[in-house]
Image (tube, rainbow, N blue to C red; front, side, top):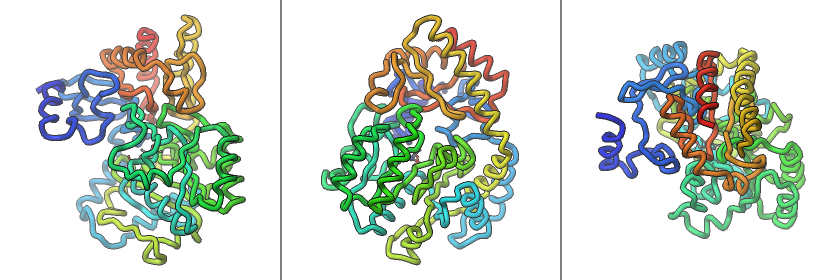
Length: 421
Ligand SMILES: *Cc1c(COP(=O)(O)O)cnc(C)c1O
């Protein structure tokens, strides 16, 4: 069966035929490709067509698909049992490595998904401060827990809806969503609401409305005012952690948050995420404190082992410089061509991630991202797909390079990009 008929079949069994909405290609039309296998920088679909992959499981796979050492570690671990529901030595080892990379993290709890990590961080912030409201920023995505589905980015932005049905207004009312990169609006709101705010949560490098780097003064203002009013600052580094540098955006900008959420890369391609931060806050978690959180498969040895092996390979600091260099090389050709042809195209990138916005101006926030031309993106996307280049099926997502994207892949991609533009 080909992807098109498999999609019809899948729709009979699963809502929209998928287990996560963006995969359904709703924003770009057509039908999703069903993937048979993946190796290094390539995906192969059920029809045997190969694609150079720039989705990389939405950023999780910084070492490419099925890197040998990680696969071996998973297999070795699986034969010793897949889950015990009891403590293991490898959990200590992963916690130690996370703390080493993120000095702001004194204690860490492992969970199974980014959504769970952020949900726990917010509950902890509320439990530790005794306050109810939270501040987030438009177009930042923090998973799909109730409190955070207010003006989120990523899949919800792709669908063009403001939030989610099923979230009671009483809960949504406790979430204040403000424009990203807008320091003065933030300062005005936190000054009036200071006593009610449990936490401020932000993607320190936004990547779920496309890649939107922060203004540094914006991040510094978040740190300054939260410190002043004893509000907990949460950096959601589920994409940026181990991606923009080994120690994430907090290392890049030199700003220490109170809590950090990690996911994607930290699980080495398996379901694992983490919440960590100041010990005095983390100690509110059960069994030490009254904030409850638990998980049947949390810290399971397969995911933990994959995470350890991945982080070990990322300790080679040349990885980040080389990824950045290749990304610059790839995106520069688009910038130059767009300028030459006078196309309204903006490539925004940071480290090894980038977004091609069909926009006249640079994109600093969600309103500007939404003004980019979705029809042009759709066209562009299908040109690339046809030519064997797999970009995200939405104008509000990031492209990711991995260490498996070599010169050959980059120069092929360049040729296709130039033609598509
Ligand atoms: C992917 C992502 C999440 C959600 O993680 P899941 O594992 O998909 O639940 C949360 N925050 C950010 C910044 C993300 O990119």
